[in-house]
Image 1: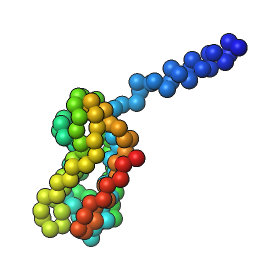
Image 2: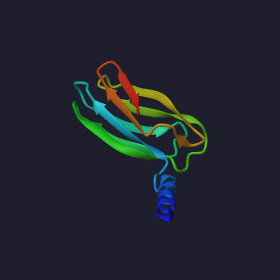
Image 3: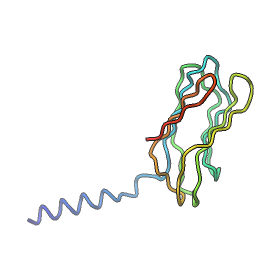
Length: 119
């Protein structure tokens, strides 16, 4: 019986582990025919940005945006300069009290639109 209590205690203590940092994984896939440049991903609080100089056609870039210093509610922002030379600005999703609700967001950049999927 003591082994069962120990195992349950071990499971419960690991499930509340502080080792998982508050933030979100971002994946950006360029399905357009031209490179996109000046790519930035950040929260609406804009405390930290993930920057990618260029994402070539059929290339995917990814990273982790730490939100350890975020405190309020907000959304996620993707900025880049598209094939037409115009700045694209997309605000999507939601986080609350500085904490991400989702674990991952994937952007798929196409010629005339950007698709978004949260996991």
